[in-house]
Length: 438
Image (tube, rainbow, N blue to C red):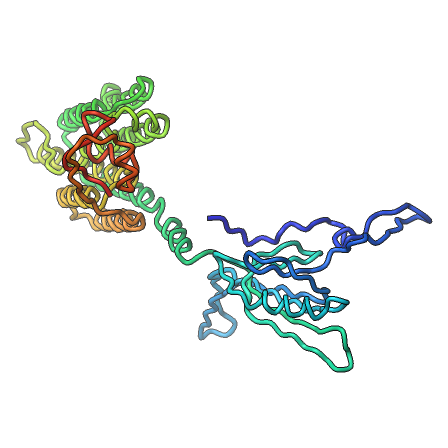
């Protein structure tokens, strides 16, 4: 989609050149001009039609902003909230005259009668302004008996905009894209604050250090499911092992350890996305397991995460339960970020992932009001971001004889990469049996 509300580029910065006048000579301290044999006229061109010329007289370009002005009962107070830029309207007045006056008049009327829209605009060409894609609103043609051989005209047009379907897609993308990421960051902040408040004066330092050592091992296990370059895996591993580095340095503050845990999870999510972006073609062709799906499942399975450690004293119990809850919250943040980055999931796939996401969310302690609100915001943001993608439902077709994958993709009208990802065939070149497609 291409839409630019800026003015079109003029033909020249010199108004004389725009009208077709050319420099002749420099005489008596100024340039003398001569008129070109074919001076540029204003024209209107209907969709798929020919430009119809007319003599330009005046033009008025109207625009502005839609503003919501709120008034208050205290004298002199009001508030202005800009809502949107108003559509630009062009009103052009001119004449049709000359030997071909009747022919051009009728041609212009017929051109203005042709339907225009954002998908098929007309074009108004004005020498001093440039060429506008426009939608016709109204036109008036006036003839006077005492002015034979010419008629005056007035045309009102609106600059062409964005088609309704494209606008909705653009609005969905603008409104929801990135909201899950922001909501995950907010949940992370609330989770760290909550963890710090609970354990600031009630933590068992030995249980805290032991618990985060086990959390580090769990994240190392997650990284073990990633397929990618050694350098990328090393970068993720180094961030995760930073948790035990803090413990080795004697760091026992709940906030520092919680921040290190979320930093490690963010490193894994970012690393997986970098691997995907750098090796998309290779992964697609050779059928390497989808890293995003694999790691998403690892985090979604944390709904039942428990530390294998004994807790006897009250401090040990609080420390253990809070650490487990922090890990599940971390997994929820990572899962939300990955869920909205899945590449072309089907409706059924997204539905299955969403069920696991809700199960993981239910496993997080929601007694903290701030954390509860942050989790609600992230769930809403992720749901809207997924809904905006218009996911397709899966279909199944039984193929009796082996058929080349590319031919089958063309026959079913399905992308070959998605066909390979949905069915995971043993032979990437031929398929048979029950084939899932969208």
